[in-house]
Image 1 (cartoon, rainbow, N blue to C red):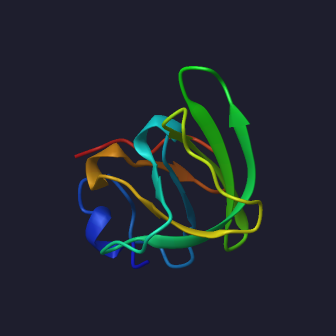
Image 2 (cartoon, one colour; image 1 turned 120 degrees about the vertical axis):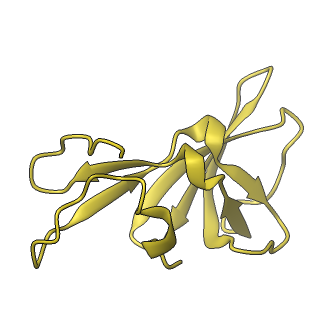
Length: 104
């Protein structure tokens, strides 16, 4: 996924080589067993039923992410899935300092 369209709202410097970490809270990630526009492919690592919701751990590239899902969400471990999120839900952090980047 190209993150460039998501970044204009953040106060990031133009220094060459700066690296950032994109963060999304579990409640802002939607997991689906069907591909959706602008979705991120992933693979289910674990599902933890919590009663009122299920926490779905997925591997997406080199990252392990957790998404909240309906309590009825079920799929075998290793199933391919797709993640989506609203662009306004992202948080950006400086990779070196781990400090959150402010918004414009």
